Amino acid sequence: MAELMEEYGVSGAADARSNGNAALIRASTDGNVTFVRYLREQLGLNADDARANANAALRAAVAGGRLAVMRELRTGYGLAADDARASANAALQSAAMRGQLAALRELHDGYGLTADDARANSNTALTSAITSARLDIAQYLHDTFGLTADDARAKSNFALKDAAMRGNIASLRLLHDTFGLTADDARSDGNDAIKRAIAGIRGESLRYLREAFGLAAADARADPAALKALGARTQPFASMQKLPMQIASAVKELIDGYGLAPADLGIDDATAQKARDSA
Image (cartoon, rainbow, N blue to C red; front, side, top):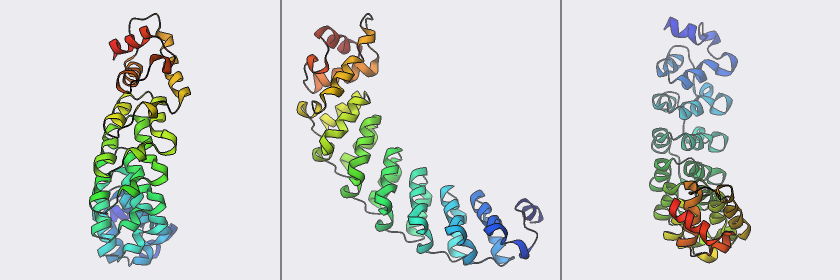
């Protein structure tokens, strides 16, 4: 233990709380549950110390997925749900963003956080999980915290739009199959999802929006300028036999899938056929 005390800059009970309980926070960050417990049992730290700096010790443990520390802070130091909710539920949001499923489970099962906590800050936990493709986290928020379609629609359907723009089909599928988002969601804000898919040259997103969400030609034509901009991307390859796969698949999907005319994209029939041959 002498080595650990030296490592964490603690010489005894007198300075165990120095620098805003830095030793406890650092040990929690490292996942050193042995030293976290020693600080409490031998040097007299308590719940007030664990709550220093807006519960920084707990937040650090959650961010790093330090389950043993999280449990020691709860069962040993006596931290509870209100501590886990510090800083507008920053711990829960951090766990979701970082993909810390076990920490999220401890926040629910051990600390007793609820759907209201998961919905904090306009459903940041769910939207960040989906946009970072942490599908196990999003599934857990649905299955265990009870989040629903209304939660998935947070921030003007940001999660759906972002998934379409990034070509994140697994996230689109989760939003459709698990959370139950519909064509109305995909068409929100003037068909912003399909606009983003076109701008991002995401043929796979365009296909999924058509096949699963039921979008059609009228939706694809919502932004004529975006269609023309996509068509213009074919021009640098006019003298080549094939188009780049990403451009070709998006053009082919819009023409053969949605039934648009080549003219909608500002291209001729030969370029459209090149896209088919290249996709």
